[in-house]
Image 1 (cartoon, one colour):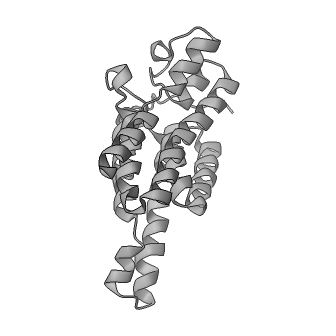
Image 2: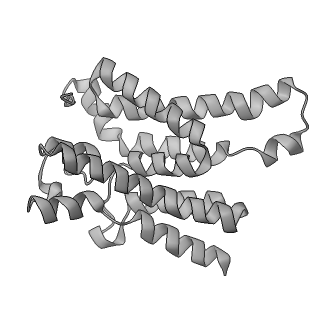
Length: 206
């Protein structure tokens, strides 16, 4: 019963299309008809409204953080299920015929629920890469990869060097779900990767 509750709550939370809602309410535009057609923060920024982009980022992060935070506190063993279902809710919202966003802001919210240091690492890496290359997609991919690599070092390599048992390592290990997120974010950015190869990717004006 707990599994079903976590799945329903997490999916419904993740599936709220804040970018679409905010742009329709405040500037009477359907974000899906502009830029990349995505409902996320970057595309909201492309329509020229920085304030709405900030609110989209915050709300999309919160919808990732809240269900994961609640699940960790009440059903900690179901954290991976909640995190993945929340993320999939954003990627495939039932309200939009399963055509959602790329999941970066929601992933950030999930990271805050899992580990504040990892979330701050993501923000720092994302910001640094964006300032250097001016591509939001490159920043998102690199930051997600960085979180996975650092987590691998922290949760596997260091414990092995300290001679911890396999059981102790597994108990503290969230690498599997972070790896799934890495694969999913690469998948949602497949068009961006193609654009980067063809040198047609749009830069972010900072």
